[in-house]
Image 1: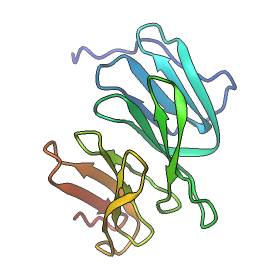
Image 2: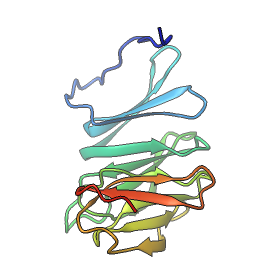
Image 3: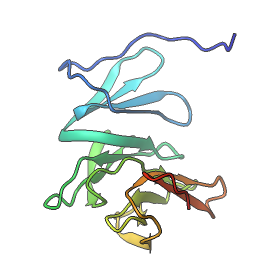
Image 4: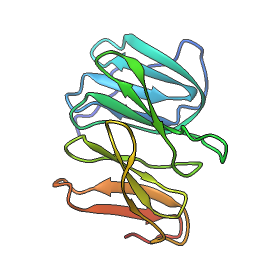
Length: 171
């Protein structure tokens, strides 16, 4: 036996279907769940709802920063919407007034190990590294893939970045 077990269930008050993304913070005290247009944050110990955010678009991915201070969200975007990457301040439980753009359906986002940068797919079949402070592009790796980037990961040291695409190519 693995020792794993369910500790209860969580649902949103609006009973929206289709949970799309889920993450647990590094000290295992909070869980964030992304639905179609709604983000909920719960206390793991007693499953209480701490906050919910109506975002009006599908949440494709979400990740707690390694230091636990921030949640990064990837929302369905479009050519007209330039705000599909958004941040939540975990301590204040509020949506921050910074956002950025990536490709229209960012399937994967990744924090740097020091929580200072966020890697997101760009619209040029590559990856942008965004500064956490203002989500501006710090570096861009473009045209390395022939199709949309579908997964991203930093090495534990933060000095390497892997990205994979829909055709199976990993760089």
